[in-house]
Image (cartoon, rainbow, N blue to C red):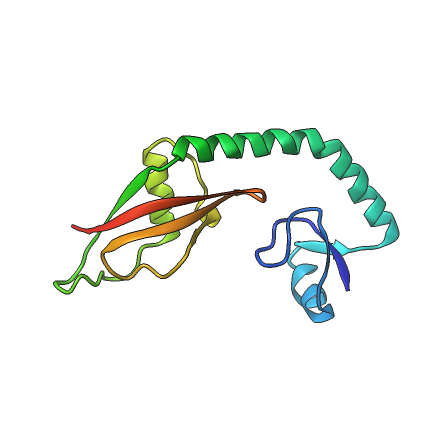
Length: 147
């Protein structure tokens, strides 16, 4: 089943992409949630026109995302967490904590754009991936320290 994505869907595609999905996933999740629409010939023409008109806007958005990635650079964040004697933290470090640490440094990155390579359950150094744009991904290092 071909659908046109109305929004970025993790693991499927980005906004205005025409993707092939299983019929049940399209009918029961993507379309009812407003994340996609059926890829009819007329809808494809509308999307093609919208993409062509939005091309110069998208270039500016990508440039802004690249500027943010360049400014963040090799910044190492420090995330405080309560931990036991063995170094295991109570709970886990979340994407919200990374987003707030970046915001404190002056970078506005939404928590939904932060992904971890692994679960953060102990003290130490880790990396997170910032999905700033579909073509701009940036690795940021962070240290989890005990409070």
